[in-house]
Length: 346
Image (cartoon, rainbow, N blue to C red; front, side, top):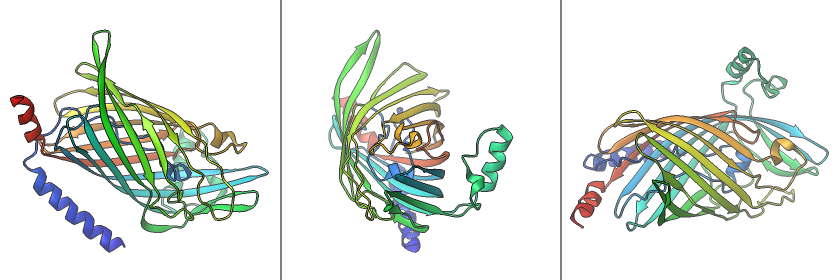
């Protein structure tokens, strides 16, 4: 599998670099394309920010990204027992294609590798230096993998330390809506319908074994150098498959907000926050029931007319979020020169 993944990724990179050499870059790169990588929440549909502006008819955007997360979640009560101690590496392919000027389709396909990692010692020294909690990591052996969740003594999920395996696929359709006026600002608005497809193994925590659906409304506005983003939304979550436990899901509601500052024609600096309510039944553990709130900071750099890169650092503000996630992504755009030429002649 690892050899196949390396060969496939190398081939895709080569094709994209060749095809992308003649494309032209868009000026609007959108918000950071981050997502909550908390393992229990990765199994279901959660909100993921996108730009409200569509790419344009015939325009293809391809993003290859690597994300690395550290997770420690050790909580229990009379009915529930959670132990998640791991580091996760995710390689993800994301695609957005403009079917028309007002309709686009999207896909996010992650490959997930879970393991014990190597950062427990560094994180303990880092937290000690800041004088903040280490979340109880010191109670377990350093860099030893654990992923299990039970309810009433029955197993929900038991994860495996393994090389890359597929997670659940996310398919979406985006439709441009009429823009709104807010004072002297024109607000771009779109509707995003998302479907999570159960392609990951539910028993080892790579998926829920069920389809989920969501509706989100991305919005953006602003004058250079500032752009502001907002995206309310809701997800309809199905009860996950388990290894024996009876787990009920809840519909989840969320709100994303962010801002970007363009310091030059090539550099953008971003900050954003993403919140959604818990997608699972109440456990009686505030650490899980309070919902997920993640804060992200990052930058985007336009390298040439075809290629841009993105770096993001994400930090937890509530417990069902990784202690941190680091993301690096590269985006290629094809066919944009043709789209602009069509606009100029229309």
